[in-house]
Image 1 (tube, rainbow over the protein chains, first blue to last red):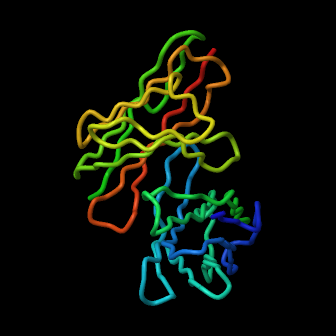
Image 2: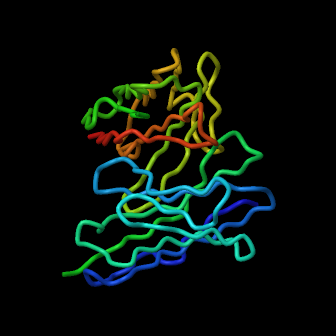
Image 3: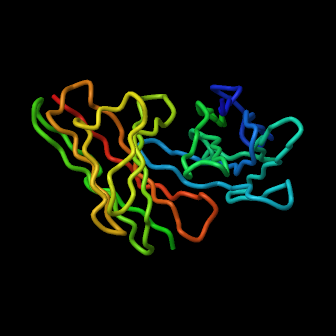
Length: 114
Length: 116
């Protein structure tokens, strides 16, 4: 079965510190990978995506992620976080064999402390 | 580009009434739209896939007679929660698949439904 796992439900970090949010997926077919951010009572905003090509993907707001096929991971990183990065982060996968449906991870709450 | 809107952003209704939520792609045509439900502190649960001009495909466990989906045009999909009850209170989010991207979706801002 295809699935997405975000290993940390909450990640507390101090402002200006680096952060990594982990995401692993399970699939026997090719995948497209996404990270979304959600601020309270809002929809989802795309941070970055991996479709093909370079495994290191850069997104908005200084975030980047690396696709590791052998470890089936797509971890999100930022070298220095800001208070404004406090939000919910979702990893999502769509599989090239399906109808475009996104499968979401459980979400990770990033709490940036001053 | 690729903006998706939802209306209303917030709605409060009495138990037993029906509520319609609209999802529009503002600057592109979306042959496929998706409806999600999100419980507090939880991830998004796909409810159904809406294709223009055809019946929606519902996920397992979603009552199609309670959550009516109509995708009447390439820019509009509607979700009607019929005979709403307090347990239907939730955050509903739609998304639209962009036709030029590989399975990429753009999300609406969401609708907060509260059933009293």
